[in-house]
Structure formats: C-alpha cells, structure tokens
Length: 139
Image 1 (cartoon, rainbow, N blue to C red):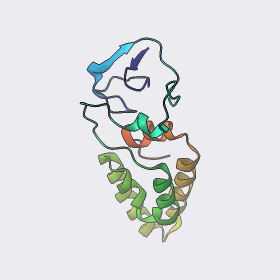
Image 2 (cartoon, one colour):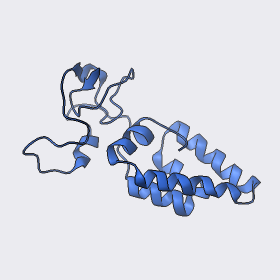
Image 3 (cartoon, rainbow, N blue to C red):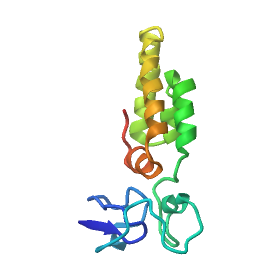
C-alpha cells in the first residue's frame, strides 16, 4: 500500500494525493496513523490535513462539507452544490441536475436533498477525498 507522506492517506495512481493534494513524488510506502488522526502534540484541527503541504500544488482547495450539504438541501434542485464543489465532472452533473429539475417539474429535486444528507453524514476527510479531490459526481 502506498501512502502519502504529507497526510497518510492511501495514494492512488493519480499525480496528486486525493486527500491533501501533495504531488505523487512525495509519497512512500510505510506506516502512518489512520487518516484523520492528528499527530501527537498537534493543536490544530483536522482542517490541516486538507491544506497542501508547503511548497506543493493542490489541484483544488478544500471545500466546506457543511456548505456543500446545505446548498444541496436548499438549492440543490438548481445544481448549486455541484458548482460549489467545482470539478469539471461536478459542473456537468450540476447542469444535468438543473435540466432534470425543469423536465420533471421539480421531482428531480429529491436527488440533491438525499445528496445533502449524505454530505453532512460523511466524515470530513472522506468527504474531501471523494467529492472535492476525487471528483465523485453523484451520491
């Protein structure tokens, strides 16, 4: 198993870590604490794990799980939460959601309501890895 040296998240085949955005050259195999656990003596919140390490490039900044969830629940029928997440796949999904809402006279609005609940119940690191850095479009 190949893990990111910056955050300990399992590194896939991509050029960047899906959790923190570190370049794939900054990964090695080894033993790390489980993702989301803070180092001993660290006083910062879990948000530090979603910030890029110094000197590296993150493809996209971390997004707030609460903001995405509330946008999905209240304005999701218009695909707003997909545009907030910002990936190319999510933007396409946002347009599809908007069209589906108009075609079904609002019945497709239940999909983003369910997505909003899923966003809010996911662990912060899992949300970031799947929806922000991973680019997952639906559910």
